[in-house]
Length: 238
Image 1 (cartoon, helix red, strand yellow):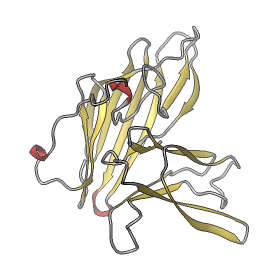
Image 2 (image 1 turned 135 degrees about the vertical axis):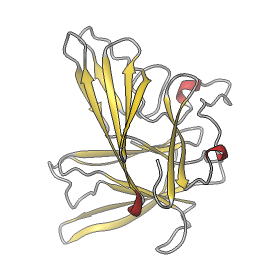
Image 3 (image 1 turned 90 degrees about the vertical axis):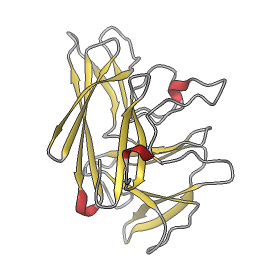
Image 4 (image 1 turned 135 degrees about the horizontal axis):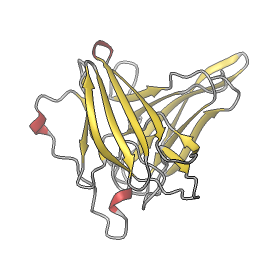
């Protein structure tokens, strides 16, 4: 998926899962990237939990924040989403995913706005099982930072907080191992918190220089953003 200055590249890895391959500057050639593949450089960890899966379910040997968590009618809560197919409609890509055991599907829709270097994504969950499915949590999508951090490197998170007469204060902090939750439970986006994030490398970006990855939820009700850095140095936002 390309805009004037950026590329967002997805692939299907050897586990038949949709995985992020690149999110950054626009690529000149497809050959500049290798194929999607799960990571296998940690002997005592599951390969399933070490990779930049685009829309992971709460299931299998995954321990990071999921995008979708459900309970099936028979009490099963394990959800593993695999790639089924895709379709392209003009400037829109739709990916079709399905659970390995139940007829529960997820359609991921992507639309590019080339002039503005913006990618919009959303998720639709479809229940094809004969019984009810309880959706415990469902995210619009996830964003992975483009490289794993060594111990001497860091990402900086910028977000907005505030209160009455002191709205939209800029907050900057280093992303540490674990989860940082930004949310509003007030029924609106609110001026106490804003559904926006920006991330840069080592805190080196300013208003005119440096690489910055950012996103915002186009939503006016309750919302939640989870920024997570895993023990292996992977950083992502759900």
